[in-house]
Image 1 (cartoon, rainbow, N blue to C red):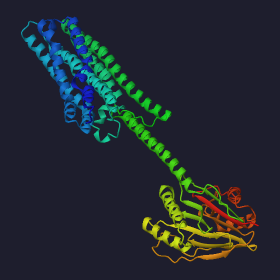
Image 2: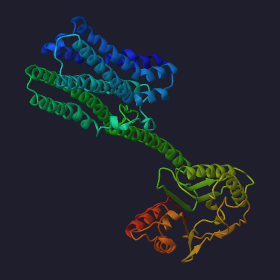
Image 3: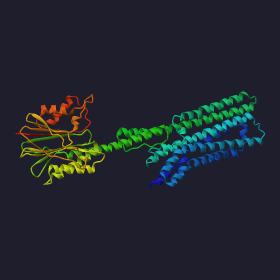
Image 4: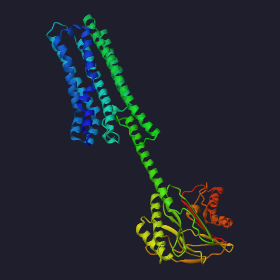
Length: 541
């Protein structure tokens, strides 16, 4: 256990438990007083000194039952084991039922034996009907009402102790494996148990008393049975009120804790937790609240982490379009999640050329975003090399990705080098959607000449060269555009992209991405389950 073990003992020590049973001595003294007040001839034959010591004897017996019920908790505290303490608390209600049940039985046998032996040495006429009435009255008071109240007090003390221990991170998790005798503490059963103790049993006993009195002609016998009925009634009223009061306070304490958990949810305090004060349906609700709070806290933390990751990924994308003489360039990127697997870039080289890049990493989320970061770092490092050609760069990236990617993941890449002095493009298409080039009043496709990068250790990459004339426009995108879906789940497709480009190629590259998005919306292709990235290049006058 942690260093606050002493505070654990302070909350769950035997002295605290015995203090929680304070109603028991009150009930015993009250019952003894009522018996004495009834002034039955049979009872008055008992010596006064013995009648005085009866409450002490009964208290000693019930205290022994309390010590036995509390024993696993004392052992768990001494062993300094959290799990043992949780187990001991879980079995406490049943141990209390057994301990106080036996204590009640011993008390009933003891007092009946004293009364019976006293009657043998006195001149009182102790009839069988008197003995039956005495057994029923004493058995209800000492054998049922007081043990039941003691169990209710035990559960009230347990709920209070578990609340305090929850501040030290006990009784806040899943304790289903510790459930013991759930029928005793299940909330649906408790009203029936209270009904049986406060209504069914006493009414049945009073019915028996009536039957005994109706069958008796002895006035002393009738008087004795009537006095036992009064004792039963007094014990029922006093004990029933105590039992209902204890149970209602326990339920109130538990529901107040559940209300606290709901307030945590309402106020967004996901660091809070709810004490599982009892192992019944309300305990299940408390576990559910803890699970919800933990999940929301994790989601909140993940949201923060995703926001940071999104900011980092945005930092990997170019912040401004490059200033290339005679050319206009624009890019656009939109992730369907906080982070994505699409990437575009403009990278200026030492030889006054510019690399234009658009890539799509298979997958979404964190894994794809990490691959994008790796790809960006490799491209910028390679672009700084003086003798690195386009083919060298693509070959190196393929080998690196093949070594690092797992589970058949890959990257489609369109990499081109623009020489604005010669007005030509050198390009490599590794499995990417063919970019479109408007040239000489027609559309040309830059078809892929190799599979995506990372799939094979060695692939045949080829570099193509295309000259650019004034007005020529290049448009490249990822499959987030072509695979956008409408209400009937039909994809936008390559043909629609080509038809749109046929009409919109005269536009400035900075306007082309917004024009494409508007086209998707106008045609009803609102479902976009993938990242969307576009790159446009145009040679001006």
